[in-house]
Length: 251
Length: 128
Image 1: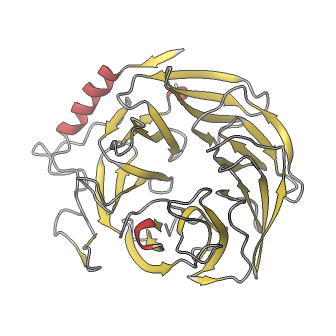
Image 2 (image 1 turned 45 degrees about the vertical axis):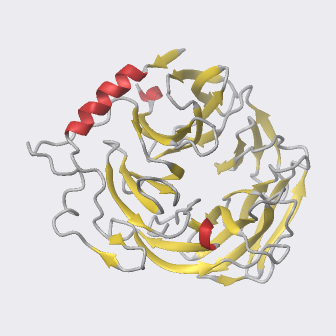
Image 3 (image 1 turned 90 degrees about the vertical axis):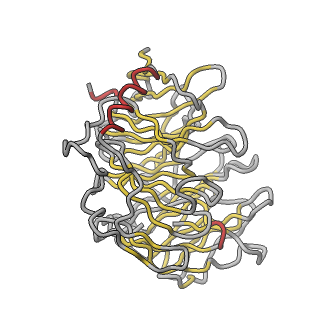
């Protein structure tokens, strides 16, 4: 996990059934040789100690400071440049990850090849757009909260697969065939959870929430039957809440 | 389009709270100095001390928990969610909070360090 206050990551052992914090690892400096904290992270497939980290600076815009690979805290030599790059990060097939620049109008999509010496990025334009867009990899695709879908069945040559007519703050591909959840909040409308078809890109169902805190994010699920997300007012320093609910579309 | 009403939420929330007198149990709490302590007896009863001894009500409706989370991640193998809480929070400051998915109860929390933020889970679910 990222420890933003100390510019570290920390391993937490879950094998006993309860989280037991372990070793702290100091993060390498970012692209401009300044202290950086860990933003989005990916544990490399088949490992417990190899971690890809999208580094970010405090108080700098754009905050992106490069992507690095750490093996039990040891930095692989090849890392990506900062400023413009994978400020958002998601996993991929073995040897690959994917990233997106959500911090300025370059809006590049990045195929990130992971090698023993580090990480190498190739930019692809015109696949995803929008500020603060997040991405999630599943089943040879990358789903963006902006609604765009990228085919990464050939990781070196990503291409546009389609687009939903909706955007949201969080997307969650389901194990159920061709289904994805999208959680959206709009100050003019109640927060909405949509069930979407990933083949037709059509909405299957939708449900609105009557929530005290209407700005929602970070939709996750243990197994598709129970969902959780963060809700907040959207005002600076307002405390957030966690909402837990059965998947309403499993009825 | 269907709408989930807050009134139903609160009723269900109260029902669960009746079976959860103590939500912040630290079966393996690490102190800010890095040491780890275990509360005898509490770790085996993560649902809290229910005077009636009954099982907590299972989650049937949307529940809202006042956890000032910065990030949340799911652990499907264990059926729990983990949430990170910042250092300025009145409760759970600088802790990792464990939430049972089936009941939405907090089953434990542990101090992890300064301003915990994002998380990533290994594919064997052994390491966060």
